[in-house]
Image (cartoon, rainbow, N blue to C red):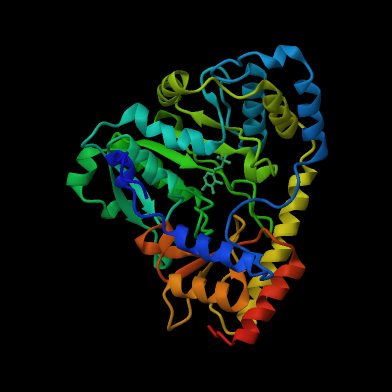
Length: 392
Ligand SMILES: *Cc1c(COP(=O)(O)O)cnc(C)c1O
């Protein structure tokens, strides 16, 4: 790398990009003509439902939508989000004060520490986790304190184990259920405990609910805002990317505590100028339109999940069917680190997976597999692993 322009400390503070080496090997394999089965990225492979694309199309031709959008998002979009929330979770929201539009939920998650933390402050971040909680914290000059998500605790953060001196400096707590990468789900009791904990320690509770709509066997994830008193301390981040296969569109929203949303909004007003209104009309169509697409998508992921988990279990791998998210979090068989297993699967079987260590220290011992290819390809992947002879 060129050394003429040294990068700021905030970038250097982030751990080395652990996926870079795997990415390089993936490109190399592809160049050699290897028939790759890519279970690496959590990028939905199914198309956005037609009525949503139609709504974008129509709105894109209207010059009214070619101007700058409003900062906080069209009231119509925020109203659609509030109505969806009421219907889905039974939580009433004021669309003017308790809903904020985001350019994808990642944007809001990454920016929220800028509004509330100072250098020296602590942000409580799960480990393993979606890397943005850590990056947003470091960019705001604060220090992450990692909450191990352990299999023996069903991957629920052990809030009581956080030392008092850490809590004194902590301002923000990130949680994410259904969880990426572990696919764990949280009960209402856990959410209630987290809300009480945040109230007791004056923490802003940021719950990432990106996978609230991706669940199986009839299970319906709930909202943390459904807990009494949650609105006093919590905001919840929602994504249209996973629920409606709109990852490329860049639209999401945050809901909950007004004061917290206003702080995030103040950061955003200074950095971005909102979401293209035609995209917001697509979002309205998604939230207000028929929801049977979502049910069908769940069915598709569930069939893939079953093909993968049952296939690997037949080979002796210790792997459980997740109740939500489109990931399977697989314990690494003896004799491998997570990086070694991912590298072996790639070089010997053309299968791309993500080593758990890439999500944090406590991700070691696992690989994450995304269910974003069809059943036939998943069966092919299991067949290749069988031929490789790696047993659980
Ligand atoms: C995919 C994902 C997001 C981001 O979704 P966007 O709305 O597309 O930005 C947020 N959190 C988790 C845990 C995710 O996996």
